[in-house]
Each structure stands twice: as C-alpha cells, then as structure tokens.
Length: 252
Image (tube, rainbow, N blue to C red; front, side, top):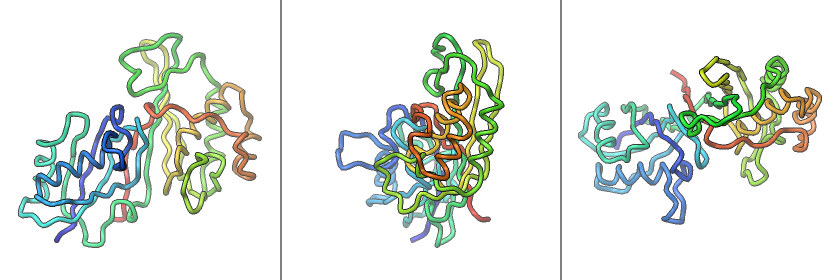
C-alpha cells in the first residue's frame, strides 16, 4: 500500500462542496473522485483533500491524498482519473507521496482568490466566476483594512455561526489586492494566504473589505472585530462563486 497525491481543478458551480454527504442526491467533489477511484483500483478508496471547499466554491490547485495498491505509474494516475471524471473536475497532476503524507494535516499554507468586477450591468462572460459590484470603492481604505488582518488573530467574528472549529485563531500571511482595467470597467482579485481558514472566513473578509471601501464600515470596526470578536463589526458573507482555492503549500 502506497500513498499518492492528486492536484485537482474543478468548477464548483454544480457541486455541493468537497465533502461527501449522507444524502446521495447531493453531488460532491469527494464522492465523484472516490467513484472514479473505485473503478480504477476495484475497491473502496477514501480520498482526503487539503480542506473542504463549500458549495459553489472553485479550485485551481486543490491537493488530495489516498492510499492504494496499484501497478499504474504514479504520474499516469491523472489520465486514469480524467478518463472517468465529468468535465467540471480534472486531475492536473498525480504522483507518489511520502508514506506519512496527508493532504490535510500536512498542509502549511493555502491561498484563496476572490474575484470581483465593478460594473453597472452584468457581464455574462464573468458572472460564473466573479461577483459584480456597482460603484467604485476606496481602494486605499481597503488596503489599510487588509493590512490590519495580516498576522495571527482570533477570527471568531469572521466565522459562520455553525462552524465546528476547535479554535478560531488563524494566521494570515498576506491579504493583497490586484486591480485590472477591463472592457466593462475594472476587475479586482483579493488574494488571501494563511495557515488555515474558518468556515466562510475568506468570503466574510472580502465582504468586510468592501464595506470599508464603500464607507459602510470603518477601520475601527475591523479592529473591534479582531479584538472583541464582534460579528456586528464585519461585513456580509460574499457569494461562493467568486472564491477559488488557488494553491496549497507543503514543506519540501
């Protein structure tokens, strides 16, 4: 029995998140991947991801691991999976991992990107993966708020009420923004890199930054959210479709 890894990309639009559900009618990435694995290895195979993405969230660099007995060359597993997977999920890379590798427990840093575009009207070529915002925020204020979020903090205020996390303390190594002019106006991507994330945390961080940019929140509100865990001081949780897991980093 050897340990293998997969790097996945998937369009989360039609998936009810990563984790397999008890209700068979709910389509998930894990269930879809494990169904393909059962055909490849002729046995039930549990596949672990670096973290659970929510319903509607996309991934460009999700990392998974599993144990199996097979004579298939590790680098050829990607082709075997892709021959069985639906078009909205693909294995980009496969290989053999260290025997103690676990895609979730071994992860050190993850980077998410949230995509927005500013326009008076919807653009059908962007609506699937971006969130439209009317008006233009104060980007300098947003940058100032983003810097306040960097470092180790208790992100209790940025977490959904039904989270099962044992601790709400997380470290954000970077919260940065990239703006780009486009035909319809302006696009913004917010990149968040951290050692781990709470349920809905990134989407709430983005909602808070936008609120600051549009003067619905102040920098004092952000400070209060971090120091006192005041949920009323943070912004709304943004839609899932704008969020994408870009990459997962491991030691070595």
